[in-house]
Every structure is written in structure tokens, then in C-alpha cells.
Length: 64
Image (cartoon, rainbow, N blue to C red; front, side, top):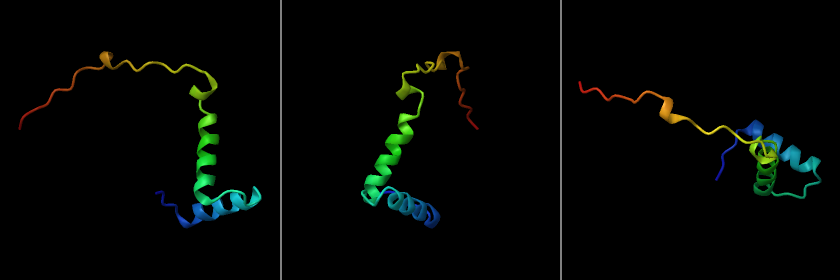
């Protein structure tokens, strides 16, 4: 379940109407997510750098 602010809900409803009203709210959210994910570097085949956690200093837990 997703909660949207009133202005976000209004924008979502406007987007649905602009698209001809063919999507329900849940389907519109899924479509928007797929569009957003399609624009990420990974989805375009751009390799991301591997995280290098071993270069970080270890965290030391202090006892008080």
C-alpha cells in the first residue's frame, strides 16, 4: 500500500486522465515506476562501480 499526499494524488489522477484513463491508480504507479527504472544507468547497461567497503576503517564500538 502506498500513501500519497493530496497534491501527489491529484498529479497522479491528472497523469491517468492525460493518458486516456486506461490505468487504475495502482497500475499507473507501476507504469511510472517502470518508466523511472528504465532511465537508470543500470537498466541502460551502464555498469555501476562495486562498493569498496574493505577500504573503510572498521567501526569500533565503545563501552561507556
